Length: 481
Image (cartoon, rainbow, N blue to C red):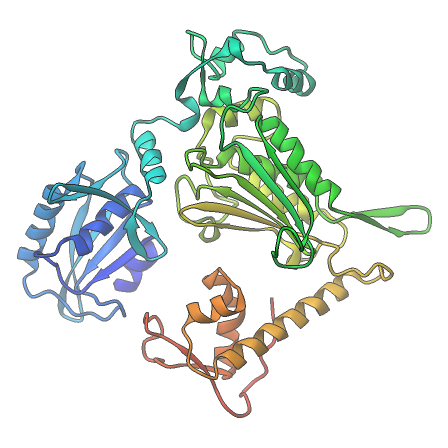
């Protein structure tokens, strides 16, 4: 039953007992689940998922309901269900994603809104609280009317681009009907983001071409470095041009023709930059979009995680629904045919990359999000190619990937001569995605007998560590990906 509940929940938290004297220990999770994508609190289960049970399930149920009504505002929806596991009583508190955000925990005159970061409930930063307030009132940043008067600004680039891409003139009344200004002539934030002048400080794009595979000093290790600010169309064009100028188009000769082999698919690049501009969080003060180019990849990072739903790495991009943080800007870019409004942008990035000559599954674009940012990684499909050897694309790529895999395995085994946690290993090797590292490296090493768990009877324990098995391994760990 516990496994089934966990499988059905996007977020899950475990509590051995119902803390009545210190209810904040679990009520902050109620706030976080309501402010996010929902979740389940299981009472009577410890962090290692062992069934402990509750001695007074009726009293605990009444206390949970009462404390939520007293300490969480506005009152969230919730369902409290009793269960039995191994003859022991449990309570499952199911909390759906709330519509009247933000949901605060209140006590002693203090009100705090919480969000989920990883498997923890933490106090929401001010900019996330502001976004939750807009969400709870069915508003968005780009629809807010400002005190900027339209007649004081010019829109030459917007009007010229609209004519070029649609064949239509941008009429004066379009500013109101498209949501860029109100009837009194005051610009919305969307309108300010489209002026020729720089009127929104956070509308910035920082681009860097690094020398090698990692970041270094901007003065010593950057081959190219540009900063752009202002109109969103200008940022789009500038970002795409920066990537194009720092990429190569190789070719291979055939009998009567040649095959061009660009590092990146132009349409995929455009989709990725548009995604960053349209879906980023403009409320975060002092923020900007970063485009970091390396020898083997381009990383495009924008402020603000998934507007709704689980982290993107936990989603199937073929089924993801379209939820727009900035609907006015998204609608305008759709009219100019820069994007669709069907949640297909990420799929387009993948499909366009797959069309490139020399593409292999290793080059598949990757997407990651946290509570604070969204990252798109485009792989350079020509990275494995030498300047003189353009013959065997796939073999070269597989050889290089295998070398990198073997090197990571060696570093892991060397580091784990002393028992290490998963987080320690990932941090040491420079990996941020625990799920990917576990699937790619830890699981094969455990299966081959080269690594062992310090708590094998509790594989999900937060105290779990991994240590290298001395002597000959039972099997060879090979990369099957």
